[in-house]
Image (cartoon, rainbow, N blue to C red; front, top):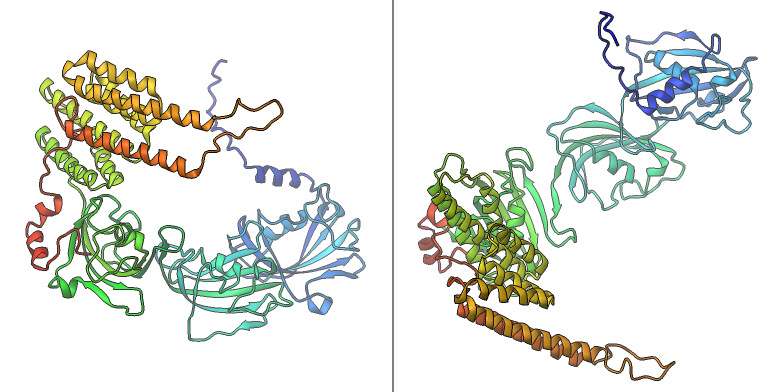
Length: 626
């Protein structure tokens, strides 16, 4: 098409479904169908807009002046105003078009033909019983108030009006502990909960306040003042309001004084973190989510009848804080999980069950087995791990070795998930490392392959054999003749029961490297034992299946539990023995099966060299200080 030289017009903005529906309804208006007469002027110059909640009194009359419906007591109503949220509430067309023309405090008379009130085609609201919806009617509207509304419940049963803005951004949720001043009145202004100086304390999620009020407070921030409008649907019985009879709607005036962040770390109520003093920064961006060097003061107490304190850094550690590197298994798991979600300067009280405290961690002498403990923790600060940007290749590889050695230690301690996390961390950093020559490329490739194989070993120990195979494949894609990767993949295939694939990998080892023949032969022998064991189990399971006469029922796998357990135990023992053999003999390349190298001092040891001496003088070491 030829350019006519005219200005290019911007594309029309696509309308939302709600806007399209409103425009379609608006086309039903014709001259004289909706007329407005002013009875009393309002104040200001602002009028309601979409998203505002309007609060009105409405009296409906026939053209002869007979009242057919009203919210006012003097006309037979309940005295309860109506509430609508423009753009969200369902209402007659005359209201939708009339409300945005009114000022606060204004009283106006709207004359409506039937097609703009309840006789409208596809009217979204039903007319009251006995309502003359086919007559032309007069609607006297008083605009009591309007304001920007926060819709809390989709059905508009809970709506919030902000009176004073608060501070911060965090809002409370279950099971946060709330301190608030609360007053309440009915929709017609009758006081239910009077104002008082004392604040009300409650925990979200424990039904201590009505459900709708709890939902509204869940949208508030500290120091915010608001009015929360709650309909009867959301007025549940509580200690705050035990009597609800006759209440159709309640308006709560709330000042959120404070709330304590309470986190259910496991989701089952056993590991609970309560923040009693706020830290500095934005949550969670300024928390030590990544592995870091942490400095904390803490006090540990037994949650039994004695309530005895078993350790206090300010008393037992010469007022020196505990320093430890997260992600290295140096403190109980529950302790570290909570500290990672703290801000510098924050103080929290942590209640921890035995399995996340000391039952799976070196236990202090004065902490009995199976003890639930409470820690009072203050996070003084933390140091993020070193940024590799700008480091030379040698420095990068040195940092990688340090992290890898930590992973090796964790592996040997049986902390396979933590070990894997260390290896994965280095592999992620390797995505941004680019060797400059062939020699660096060879060192880099060997290091990456070693890390992948360590990850595969972690997966094996965690019982995730398929993932172990996938990780070995990453090494074999780059080097199909990598003997150690074949050995580890073959072992995973064997543990999965995929014996042919396992045999192929072990036999391929011998064809590639004759020096690997002893290890491959031992693996093939173990594979044969696994196959025979599998066949024995199959014969036991299907024994007698085909011995029955036609019509008789044969049970499959009806062996006694004792026999089954015995077989499983035997299989487990054989696997353990074979693993020990593999570790003793070493891997095909002459290195240890897990590619562990000599450990270097950990990050804590480098940053705080005197730590070991200080802890030793206390009769503790850094792994058992807690």
